[in-house]
Image (cartoon, rainbow, N blue to C red; front, side, top):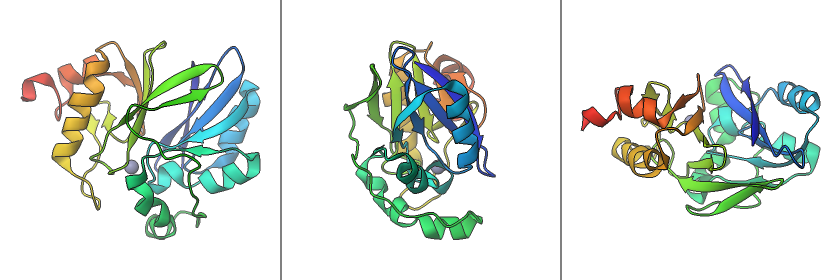
Length: 213
Ligand SMILES: [Zn+2]
């Protein structure tokens, strides 16, 4: 699985273009906005986008979804259905953070823990990781040891839990019980900031390291 990170929106959200090398078919994960940057990346890599994947429905992750799906005629997969209130609330989120008003959309497929999504010939596991939002999902590509974790975990930090239906203890549990068991060597692309590995966060993250107990 190849990937390219495209920071978008004033929040510098890590939209990711991921693709199957063999088929050159791709998915855009979390198209929060700045679609011209995403289009440019797609053109430069010469891949065919076949779907949009969403980790959760905050505006900086999902704000460009309706426009992109219309433009390309491709389906939307994710997040888990508990995030529907955030999708319905996208216009209000936009207003609050000064984003252009997005259209609301309905995912073609809601995702659940233990399901899989495909990109070309590649398969990614879906892990439901609530806490930051209740319907947050993570995508994990086992063969390349790569996870796309949205706003669950960051290099040196964790997602905010002060939004409606956010919950700190639930988020910690998602990280420790869903993500860390995937293995120390697994690299992850967070929703913001630099990449890291689960092993590094287990050793050094002030919120979820092993010695924090
Ligand atoms: Zn978020």
